[in-house]
Length: 120
Image (cartoon, rainbow, N blue to C red; front, side, top):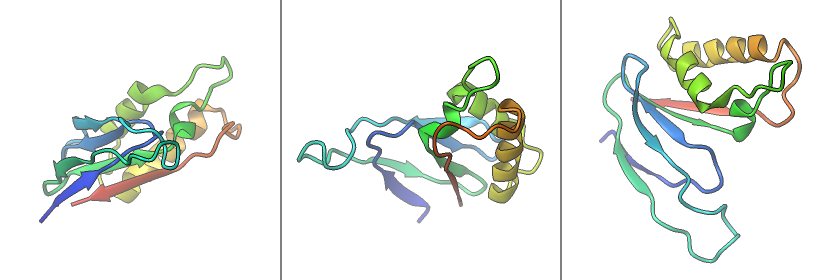
């Protein structure tokens, strides 16, 4: 049905990209991580249209620093996603990987870096 629900706890915002790579929606972590409190909280519904992608990522990606200790940041990640010449999930992931490598000048990030793109 291309419909789903997203629940975030202790994670950076997830991004819903339209078919052109522009941000259509952001989902924020309105919940604490699982196990911190007994209540689970509510999930946010979304619809994933053809050509759109849901982007989930760890904080290590946006907190990765360059040689001047400047973090990539959420805005930086969104710019990278929007400028990817290949709009497939694999193409965008490779584009982000290369951009992260340029940002960190090849140095390993200080935290784990994970990213998942789900496409309709």
